[in-house]
Image (cartoon, rainbow, N blue to C red; front, side, top):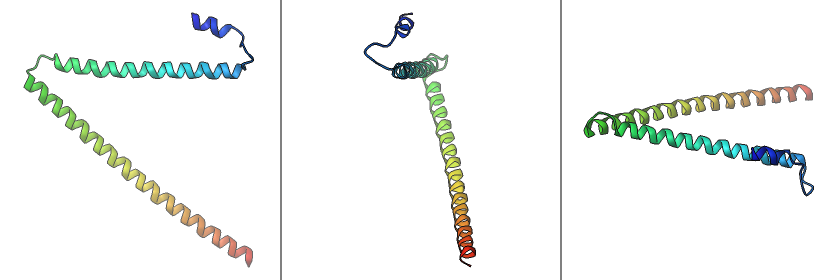
Amino acid sequence: MWKSAVAARPPAGGSSVSDNNREEQEDLHEEATNTLGWFLAGAVIGAAVAILYAPKSGKETRQLIADTTQKSKDAVVDSSQNVLDAGRDMFERGRKLVEDAADLFDRGRKLVRG
């Protein structure tokens, strides 16, 4: 409620309306970022508590954590390898495209010169 009353007041000290809008947008962006950060932190803490209080023995829980960590690691390695392969393919296609463009340019220049 306080923010809306402040926003409704005309700018003081010669500030432009665009400056006020930019400040409001920055405030909203910062607030959204903080909210998302706290949500993610809460989710991680909640997951950790859920695992620790699960009705399993400590040994089973540690094994579950180790298995999940290994699966996550494998997924990250596979994903990064896929991204790397896709990047190499895109680089090669781009290089081929540049070579073809350079060839066309040379041919065009030769045609113009006669």
